[in-house]
Image (cartoon, rainbow, N blue to C red; front, side):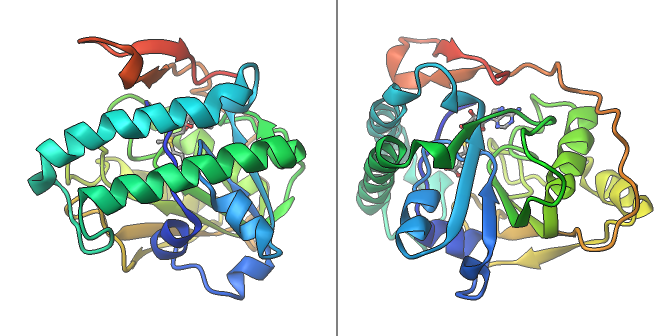
Length: 256
Ligand SMILES: C[S@@+](CC[C@H](N)C(=O)[O-])C[C@H]1O[C@@H](n2cnc3c(N)ncnc32)[C@H](O)[C@@H]1O
């Protein structure tokens, strides 16, 4: 798993965020090196990010993310045909925007450290219903080959627990392919049984072929949620590809 740096504009597009949405109290989980909290915060949004990488060594994150972006540029440029370019235009602009996000993230992390909270799904360090809206990009479903279905359900329930209105997740395809995460409908049925209806929304953003759908969970009127959250021991280390040669080097783990 990698730490990536998406921008507010990407978040707006991935999650179909309106100006009204940006007036809500928002959690970004996982925040990674995204500049959503920095940029939305600068325009007045009460936003917080949570990620296991915000623990020890977090001061290096902006720099490491920048190097990761440089490394990824080589890969993306060499295999440009694998991606959808409607939103970015091409590899050069993609890399420039991601680097701007990583820099904005690093600056905000230093300026407003309290906005970046160390924590891991499926156990977040927040009270029930702490946020109006919870956003989750490129962890669940994306890493469906590495994270178990059990972990996914526990994590989804946890995201619902800390939300008052909605949880939005993007994308619903695996990060290595254009295939939808295979247990998606089973997970939706399990959530439905807990009083959490969901829908799939098509959005005006795709970077992976077929990756233009967000899953929206309605967190307003569920009953009691199970407190037993299996799957917490799933382990998928964060890897920094630029530090590796053939094999990526593992610097941290997904567990806080
Ligand atoms: C690909 S990044 C996505 C970051 C950001 N949402 C974005 O779109 O730029 C995946 C992130 O998931 C974080 N992560 C890994 N395991 C996690 C867990 N159990 N709970 C919360 N975040 C986790 C990683 O540290 C990493 O920053």
